[in-house]
Image (cartoon, rainbow, N blue to C red; front, side, top):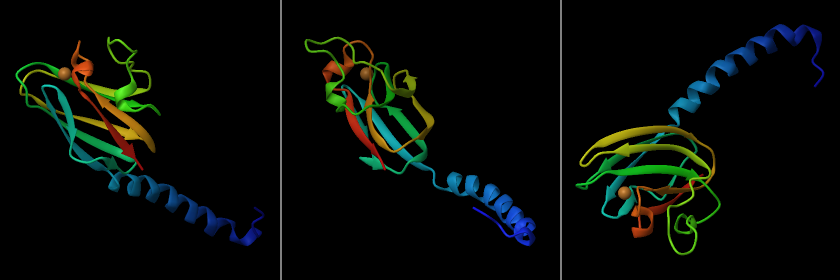
Length: 137
Ligand SMILES: [Cu+2]
């Protein structure tokens, strides 16, 4: 873009203001998702969330250790393990949190738009059903 010479100072000031305002707007757009971990399910409070800063409030309601792994993947959450069992692939993981029995923790992530899988990959738990899908839009 070619700017007229006398407009440069004003444009510079406007650009500076925009640079300060944009991160502030991004911070305002944060959202939170409550996730309940039980034997053997992962249950988020919503099925989709806006992109940007997302705070997961993860509550382990069970009497054993569970975890939450957030994975960005085009695959369905139910299709991350090889046929015949074993643990799920955590390829694309963007964050995780481990919780002892009856603990609640938060996990803050900056998420891009796309499809995500929320799983617990403690031995055997994924295969038992601890996985669900989340859309970030
Ligand atoms: Cu688990």
